[in-house]
Image 1 (cartoon, rainbow, N blue to C red):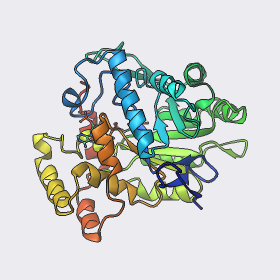
Image 2 (image 1 turned 180 degrees about the vertical axis):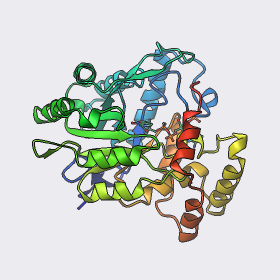
Image 3 (image 1 turned 90 degrees about the vertical axis):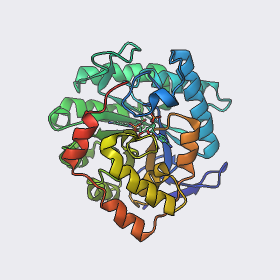
Amino acid sequence: MTDRNTDEATGDALRSLGDGGPLVSRLGLGLAAVGRPGYITLGRERDLPGDRSPDALYRRCAELLDAAVEIGVRYFDVARSYGRAEEFLARWLASRADGAASLVVGSKWGYEYTAGWSVDAAVHEEKEHSLARFRRQLEESRALLGDRIDLYQIHSATLESGVLDADAVLAAMVAARRDGLVGALGVTVTGAGAASTLARAMSAQVDGERVFDVVQATCNILEPSLAPLLAEARQRGMGVIVKEVHANGRLTPANQRPEDGALTARLERLAGERGTGIDQLAIAFATTMPFVDVVNSGAATVAQLQSHAAAPTALDDEALRELAALAESPQEYWGKRAALPWH
Ligand SMILES: NC(=O)c1ccc[n+]([C@@H]2O[C@H](COP(=O)([O-])OP(=O)(O)OC[C@H]3O[C@@H](n4cnc5c(N)ncnc54)[C@H](OP(=O)(O)O)[C@@H]3O)[C@@H](O)[C@H]2O)c1
């Protein structure tokens, strides 16, 4: 059962992130696009400041965070590997008169940022799901965010990484939750094998105690295949966050890729007929799924975030039917995502 409450500032409904979890808004904000100069989203040259120094990107983050709070956003998503995103969020939280106490913060461990603030680095992030990496990154996250880590997630767990079979890692995560070093535990899943990973994560236990309280997964118009499993996770009381709802920019007006021409034309028609934008259609698609607690916006500008917040909260059956026909196979979708360049 989802607890409901109302945000005093906006009057919007809040819901608990999983049974007994913290109260969150339906729209969340992730800082992957603005915590570092390089990323894979499509319109960065246009949408980020020409000056991508740490100071300039902190200012962009702070503008986005201020606007998000104004809109009623209560969930904020960062990771050790998003450049300085944890640091920026911590600095902004400290600058708020009330410390923004009612906001919910999620971070992740498992990837290390290796780009050295360059957009041309050969390797932008490096993955390791070992016990040593967990211990070190938890310490680093806590050094920045202190007791504000409401959710600590394994970043892009896969069956191949072995982390879900690593009893010592899972036990250390559960101990961190028990000791109050983090609030809840989560797992994020990515890639064509995400369904198997998610199924395994949902049943992970340490001494009879469920490991993961929350799952964060990709679920969008082009890649909706995890929806049934996410619904089951929610039914079992886990919190559900969906990410990459704009397919890293492919489901926005910024998508000028010739190979997506037919897709963009159909989305423009569907959106136009409903007096909305493509980006809003993508948000609405995710919001209408009843098992979703948080739709993670990856907005790089305040205008994008405001557009996401103004998305419709329901879609007609015809739109849902037409959107369902746009789904790609997981293999095709993730193949295209892997080819998006860092820039
Ligand atoms: N494994 C994981 O745990 C994982 C993986 C990915 C993401 N995430 C989380 O989910 C969040 C969102 O994911 P994401 O940023 O990768 O993908 P996304 O939300 O699908 O794409 C976000 C990008 O779409 C573009 N966009 C959005 N609205 C737009 C508009 N109205 N007009 C034009 N362009 C628009 C922007 O890029 P441009 O401005 O460059 O066009 C924006 O940065 C992240 O911040 C992160 O917190 C987690």
